[in-house]
Amino acid sequence: VLPSGLLTIGSSAFIPCSGFTGSLQIGDSVNSIGSSAFSDCSGFSGSLTIGNNITRIEDFTFFFFYGFRGTLTLPNNLVSIGISAFQE
Image 1 (cartoon, helix red, strand yellow):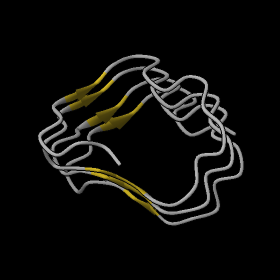
Image 2 (cartoon, helix red, strand yellow):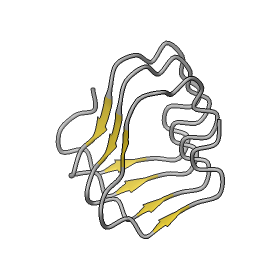
Image 3 (cartoon, one colour):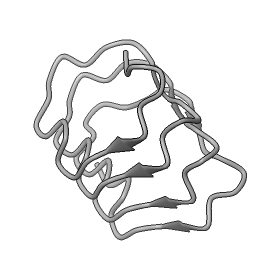
């Protein structure tokens, strides 16, 4: 669970992580997610919702996000998705 009021998720913030189960909701308070923030995470079993204040998903943000089979919800105002942002 990410704290409410969180503004920024820095580059490589959760690299690497394993055993990540359940859903991840990146709230509307978050205005940026750094490059490789969730790279090399495994075991993710739930849905991923990215809040409405994100306009760009940086390069490699969810790179090697192994096993993700849930629902991905992107914000309507998303302008760009970086290189290999969702590569498994």
